Image 1: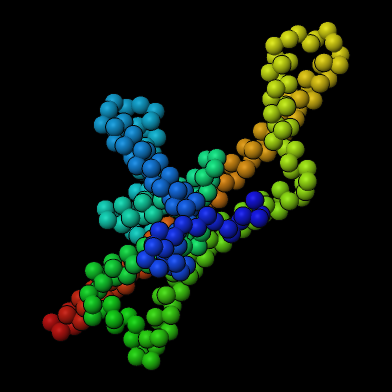
Image 2 (image 1 turned 180 degrees about the vertical axis):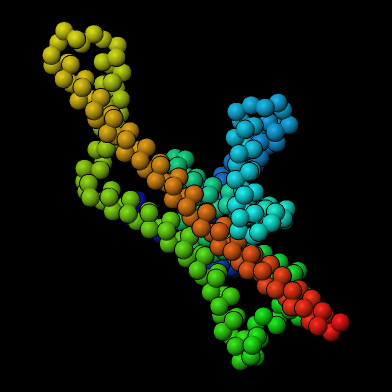
Length: 288
């Protein structure tokens, strides 16, 4: 794994036109991982829409609980429920989470392991926040934020805004790749013995099936081999489940942090807009 950690199968679809630079290259594993994540999301959406229109069931309750959680997340961070913010934050969280979770599927790479995907997610968040600022303050109010209190501060404000893209993208990319590096280091510790792990798993499973089909209570040697096999299987499955739990936790944490940052930026924009309205109302009252 460590050998191919940053190496992808590169496809150059525009090579016939002479466009062979890095910008025109496509990482096939990342594209496949992204489309797998989107397919799962579409499937879960269709399933949820079906069950939400039916009678109450465990699946209906689960979907309603997830929706309520996202509603509370939106209200707690923004201050009020607004449908447009709720939809964007929910989609941002779910897309980021499933782009990370697809690595739990065999032979599928997590899309966020590529900086391009992390940068695209951060750009979506950044552009949406900037668009909402323009909607709230207008073009003049939006530009005024960059020149307030002095025009000379405009470059600093611009750099500060653009740094949000780097902060969100590198935070997501760094944490995902960091987990992959740690896992590859653990695998490298086994050295040449790592080639024996897969055969050992199949041997243990085969022995477990064999001992479940025969009566080995009367033979001490067979009982010992059976116990060793069970312990080995328990250790192997425990390590596998630990990796799965850590992968799910990492995906949820990174998605939550990215969503919270976006919600915070939206909340700051709305708070600034409310302060402007209060100031205008106060000035109007003084004039009257």
